[in-house]
Amino acid sequence: MIISLPNEDGVIYSQVFPGFIDKAALLAGNLEKVLEVLQQGLASAEDQSFVEIFVSKYLS
Image (cartoon, rainbow, N blue to C red):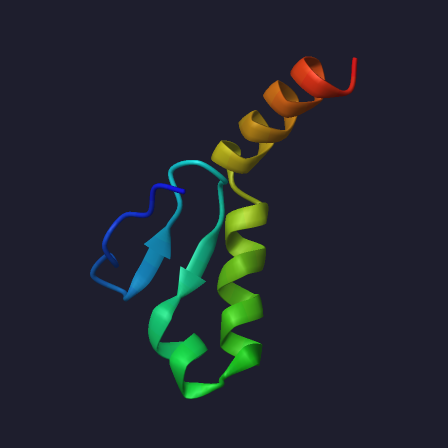
């Protein structure tokens, strides 16, 4: 999996599987913040595009 460095907010973005991980929150055990950032990623246009491509390739 290709993963970028954390951005200015400390959020890591996977270039292979769209999603966001808040590194500091994860390491601190702040699962509420981890899930909040993950939900933001799942609501993004990038994730929607990933889902559409995945479905067309593997579930059609």
